[in-house]
Image 1 (cartoon, helix red, strand yellow):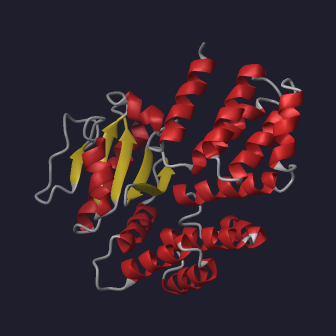
Image 2 (cartoon, rainbow, N blue to C red):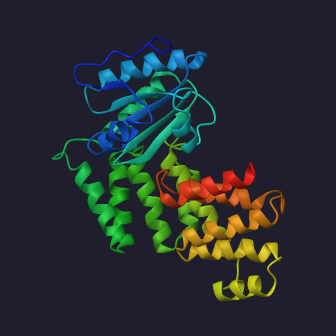
Length: 302
């Protein structure tokens, strides 16, 4: 129970208390084989006392298809800050080392079951075809066969319309094809059960950046504009957008940090807002995100 000294371990080690020291082993490494749910809570949080036992019961009922790690934010402030936990309870789900779903606040038991049922399909045992089909679609996408990947993801969604991995994959496939309108439509109309999943939110951020990139000038022209007038705030902002669109994410972050240093209040703090948009598209463990957040924090609190 939340608020007690510790959570008893189950025989199969399905539910455990985690910490910053064990996060890599308990969550990132463990999620390579089975989805891991991370419950960020605190002893003083009333809704946490409602959600915690309900999560534990649902995880136990899943019989090994998911695991649960509970993180006390008061005792583990660094990891909570790194993952931008702004309110509790907050729940993230990880699979293959990546955040794939999540929600905030205490939700009804029916929604918890849907959440866990969706995660259970990701970690389905080999042989049922789902894991293999998802892996095949991802391989197609990585190899540039985006249209074939889209067809495979769409077929998987016919079987389970709320499979967040397949839905996110379908949107990414349309982005790779260059069908920005379709990607945006899919993101806007995601099923209610997965619309707030971290993977879907990350793709929405990518779509927003892609929309912005379509409106700025050529990269070389923007570099020249900044060189000719280092005080041109808009040129710096547009350069960062173009750099991100070209695949130079680190360059985009550096350019926005330079703009924030130059004028943090410009355009209602647009540099900081854009930085957070980019961070939202990255894995929380991505070195670019970690370094960028640290540099931004040092400027904010300098």
